[in-house]
Image (cartoon, rainbow, N blue to C red; front, side, top):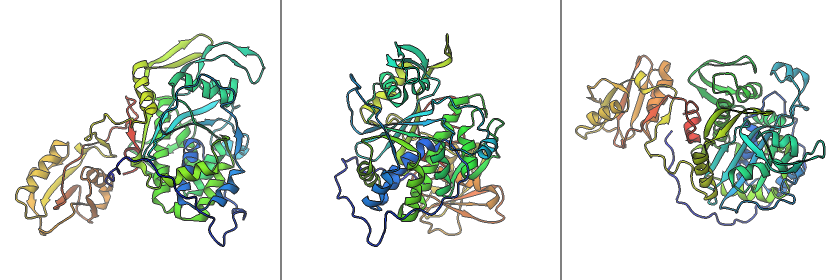
Length: 494
């Protein structure tokens, strides 16, 4: 589908707090949620989803009743010399590797053996823009080289001076507070809120929203987690979602590849929530928020009012409103004595990334408008016959040339269509080539895809009066070979 135009940037105006819906008892317990079995990707995502879900405006009383389920922590206690506050809101979203609430059967089935390290399995900064039109998610690799500030070890009670560690060790030594201090010291981004999610909230949430759809151009197999997905489109329920976002041994990208898949999953979850009508279903809203909040730890300042106000401001939020990036790495496998192999950030590129967060700027603001959209089938593999469905002379040749220049295998012999009054451009295709059709339609903003049995492997484009341009598309996985910014609609299924 085409990316909807962005609304003009404007400061969100305060809105009146909605009153509880008449006839509803917010204290009424939720029906039991069937527990299946997922895991991370949404630890971060599920909490972000609560923010989005709050946009339904179900009622302050309902949210207040759920607020009591949140375990509170104080990650900002006695902190001094913090970075300057910027515009917008920065949330440090961490997922711990705690597995105490997962049954032995689930641990065995989804390869969750071994003792937890009581450290942060995933670390992300989620920046919500001041106008509430954009969410920027920056993944911080857990193996990032970091220098711990002076602190008191929460386990031994001993005082430690600054020393090198992997970033995820900050939580093990000093909990949420040391994690915030370390991240702020490395990024110079002031953290406004802290949210910590464990496996349980992810597991419950994926099931309660009815599963999440992901697409993969290549088979995904990981013997460590048991993930085994053929190429194509899949709706992942709890267990498979857990395997998908945990997988680290699919390719040589290891943890960096896993972060890209987690970002892909986040975009897909936002798509699921915002397009399924779930926001309009009070019972589903309650079930999802309860599933999430029951296993969340958050700072005292992130409560009911904040969730509702932010949610109402983000009613038009969609995958195209989100963007994802990973801190640029300057050196892989940086060995540190007593620590092991770490990842050193690229100091120049990382600073540019965090400067954009501090200044409330889109991470992709310098990216070309014609940047290629990710599709599942490469244009070079798609054969196209162009027909002119209008009475505009030469339109067929113009569309054919534009598609060919973008990489599509056109016949180079456009013809006139039987109907010459076509208003909306049509992509006709044999149902057996549906992935190719979606990839072609992604290159033609606003086009309609129409299945035609027996058409064969050559797809047909019937140009309408709405034809404007051909958008560049590519099949390369954006998670390979670079740490570029991608939008949510580019990594979610087309």
